[in-house]
Image (tube, rainbow, N blue to C red; front, side, top):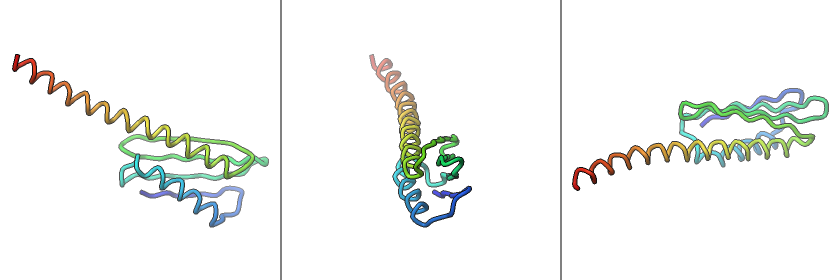
Length: 112
């Protein structure tokens, strides 16, 4: 899992980079090992704009948040992304479950 962090109109600080990497690590359980992420942190007109794009399991997930505080914008963005990834994982698991249940139903009907 890789994350590329881009800073626009603000100085690249290690504390921000570490915070972003720590929040991204929390998303690890929803992503495959080959997942890639691009995080863009921008400040425009005293508003912090954070945007993340993650490619995983053949899908692309994108979230954009704005807030006067950079830290708050990052937290909200990662929280929203966690929800998207959780729903996607649940859908994949349900889809697999339906396939298996269909085979079991056919076997039971043959036994009867």
